[in-house]
Amino acid sequence: MTLPRFFAEEGALTGVVPDAALVLGGDEARHAVAVRRIRAGETVEIADGSGTVARCEVTAAVKERLDLRVGSVQRFEAPALRFGLVQALAKGGRDEQAVETATEVGIDLVLPWQAARSVSRWEGPKIAKNEKRWATIAREAAKQSRRPRIPALEPLRGTADLARRLAEADLAMVLHEDAETPLVEVKLPDAGEVLLVVGPEGGIGEQELAVLTDAGAMPVRLGPEVLRTSSAGPVALGYLAAVSGRWA
Image (cartoon, rainbow, N blue to C red; front, side, top):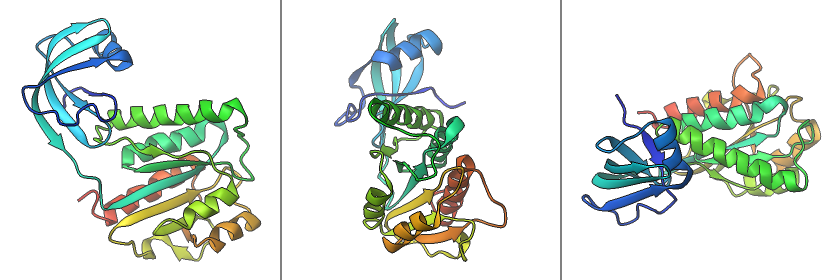
């Protein structure tokens, strides 16, 4: 049975060595004590979200605090080839579902996109609120799937800003049902950044697609079926994780 895992603040495990004392506080400690019923004498894993995981013995557990003694420390290097999901905003929580599942698959970066056909709109105070919500979803999914790293979340972008961002990637692809190139025929780079763009419920319009392809993005298709915006990204990223060796 796998050990319970909790996330400390980023960088909290920098320089930590076996037999060191640690303290986990805040919401994570509250969840550990009140929900998971963690008690003194149990063994847990503490991750910092940036690649370090410590296996620890709980020496004391109170309402909002876990006192820990480090038993062992593992450090996981960042992958040479990084995958990012550009997810268009969608109604009914389908965009959030895509972020959650893609995180479980192993995504390294999430970028919200305000597409022309997005029914859901982030405006004013809703931008910061929803960016924070997506960050929380990614964090919780990383914890559930026992990942040593939490995906980075970039700010909301419109199409013009997204095009400039795609131009920076080593490989950018746009899932589109009318694309001639199947995803299975795309050759991945050995290292660098691969960004995958998924449109909203109504799809990506021709003018919008032209803006993205002019920036260097390649239109690709999965197969004969048309997937929902909530499933297209995770399915494609699962394939990429497999063929790239991430799941080897």
